[in-house]
Length: 165
View 1 (cartoon, one colour):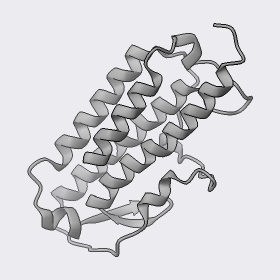
View 2: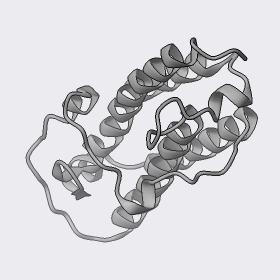
View 3: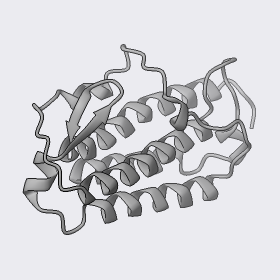
View 4: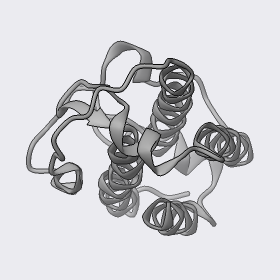
């Protein structure tokens, strides 16, 4: 979780000071706004936390090989978000998005609290790009996924500089 904590801190630092107008400004047609990126992170983390909890409740062990989830930060390989993780087009405030991210992180922490090392490494669930991942690797992926989208947010912020806010 240490990488996840650092990634979240960097993410929140990156968006602090942005206005709600900046967060919701589409800088390129068909591309996500910063608000949509943040909502996507929330949606993925909430969904992953739910599925992790469900998997942990089952008495099924299905170990899998370790995958290179750290490659999730590589933005040269485009990945389309699955349906449940696609953000809405609704106008959102930074405060609301921060609250959503707080809720999703609490759900993730709760889902793995007091879980044995054996369960973290021996129970797995599918990932749309990497295939089966252990719960431990899923948790790691979430941190790397946030780092990936932090890069996207920084690119959007650069593009925002050409607008007068």
